[in-house]
Amino acid sequence: MTATGGVFPAGAATRLLPASIPFRYFGAAVVFHVAAWAAVLAGAADAPGFVGGLGWSVAALHLVALGVLAMTAIGAGLQLLPVASRQPVRAVRIAAAIWWIYTPAVAAVACGMGIGSPKVLAAGAVATVAALAAFAVLFARNLVGARGMPVVIAHGWGALVSLLVVLATAAALVGTYVGVPALDRATALAMHVAFAAYGFMGLLAFGLSYILVPMFALADTPGRRPAMASLGLAVTALVLAGLAAFGVATSVLRIAAVAAGAGAVAIHLWLMQATLAAGMRKDLGLSFVLVRIGWVLLATSLVAGLAVALDVPVDGAATLFGVLLVPGWLLTFLLGILQRIVPFLASLHAGAGAAPGKRRPPTPSALTAGRPLTVHFTCHLAALTLLVAAVLAQSPGLAAAAGVAGAAGAVAFAAAFAIAVRRMAGA
Picture (cartoon, rainbow, N blue to C red):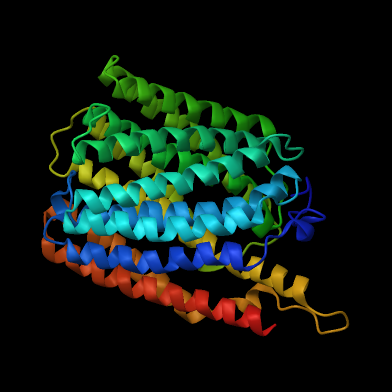
């Protein structure tokens, strides 16, 4: 990003990965998206009251978290961070190899959880941790010596530290299932949820938003000081949540963590709204309707998190918090951004691969399939509504309906992705 104009940074095309690398991560995320909603359907009987343990409900959660969110984060991080840090792409072969380890590993984790097999789960978890650790090394190498976008880079460091906590707590949680407990399960789980959702994915989403939202809206980048203030509050919230997980003034620190997190979210959303309002491109389509809904669900998840922290006697409060947090905020926001990133990168790659003298590469809008994305928009919101209703009413039938609607929307999203890739290849 430049400071003015919201265009992709000069020289960014020279820092493109081969198209096969980011698109294989995005493609796997699209497939796991379908599988996640299918797992919701398979686990509909337990989904409304799910609070932990093995089964298809926890498999669905991790298909979203690992298969969609983290998979997309790896693909986007490997491609966008070199642009933000103004450094060349490094270790292209390792970036490609991580996919070959990570993709079957996520499938093994989900299957192990779904069928209730600790051995399959442990094998998949070991490979998943190894692949994410390799990604963390590549991520750190690009953060070191970064020369541009200090706000994005600072968020990257926060996301990286959070990822390390996530890997450690994931290993501890899997250890409890195979008889090798390394940390109290309640402590590990509280740390894992906070640092995975609000730490790794949350800080990465916030940081990359300072690149992507101004770029798509054709606006100036937000101010550095308020963005760093938001980051400071977010990190404070994570530290407080971590201390609370270890039993240090648990109730007080959890409330303080939610308050600090609310401050971070308020500043970030104020910056995002100001960017969109000032942007030259006003109509950003259904993709940014999803982004805005995701932002609303982010704020709502904090309210639900406060209810859990205060032990409010509401049936399904913890489950509702998880729904608002993962398929609510994170998945909805990511799907809105992803349907913008895919045609944009496809257009860049089509231009980079075009022979001299040939026609101009297709624009992102020419690579976007509107009809299937409209179907996905409708089905995704229906699925979320049904899932929330299922938790509130403790209804397996509504949970099953959510799985059907979500799967239909995921198939439509996959169709839009396939069309974009086919049009890119044709160009």
